[in-house]
Amino acid sequence: MLNTLKELCLLDGVSGNEGEEAASAAAPAAIPASVGNWGLSFPTEGQAPTGNASPADLAKYDSYYLGDTSQKVIYLTFDCGYENGYTGQILDALKKHGAPAAFFVVGHMIESAPDIVRRMAAEGHVVGNHTFHHPDMSSISQQDAFQKELDSLAQLYQQTTGRPLSRFYRPPQGKYSEENLKQAQALGYKTIFWSLAYVDWNTDSQPTAEQAYSKLLPRIHNGAIVLLHSTSRTNAEILDELLTKWENMGYTFASLEALPNTFT
Image (cartoon, rainbow, N blue to C red; front, top):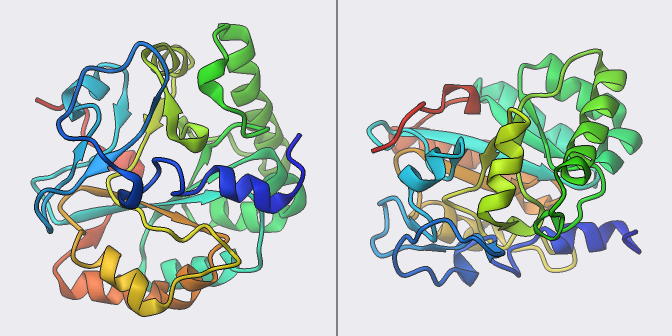
């Protein structure tokens, strides 16, 4: 068990390989057979980054880190380890802009903030599977144990909202392997990584708005799957203006449900 709620957020933070600050991928490689950490490199600002696996290789396992790169479209995603008082404001901004998003939740989020989770669903957002207990899923080799983490979360969501959970999965801590992708695919899930994130997870040291914009504006790109944390005060405070800035750059917002089916 995690000792604190903050520990859950830290484990899922960009301090590992979750964002561009920690990324060191030089060129896409084949899906690692052993455990890997998702990472990105940004050779050219304004262009899609290189992941440590290519879109085509990931697509073999119904996995994505990019969407439709032929269009100025952004796919907004939020990781939700716990309710820190900001998700309502985030939902307000999304509603104002008519922007769909995906919220990847864990068991604690549903148990402790069921009304917020029900609001996500009622307002048409994707609610995805971030596992029940937020373990390192790459250490789970047995399909039944892997499935239990996802099924337990899906069952709790169904009981809480009366709706089936969307079949989108995000690996905790960005840790994955080829076997993990196969395990998720066998359960009918699409695994969702990201192509843009920033250091927003540390609730004791939140970035200023200017620091957030310095990462999120120049590195936005066609087909971006953006990872933000709903525990971030900064994200809640800037989201309305951030979405406006992206709209002024010509971008629109799409649901993960609109991800392309194939990559070449």
